[in-house]
Length: 88
Image (cartoon, rainbow, N blue to C red):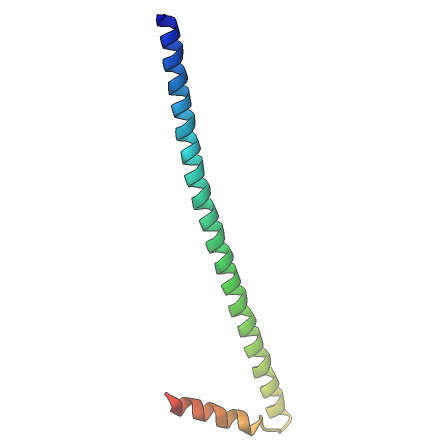
């Protein structure tokens, strides 16, 4: 009878440890997934900023080429920019 009790106690301890490890694994998995989502969002934001910067630089180079060729940039664009400055 005592041997059965010891085996039963050992089984309970092993199962409790298994449950504890499973809980830790699940919590760790949740943290890892949250970190992966955060990194993906950060990468997406970085790519969007880079795309906006490249678009800006392309427009600036185009404007510079127009000036070098003796042409003026679009007058409406300058007017819109002035209006934006006064809107604030």
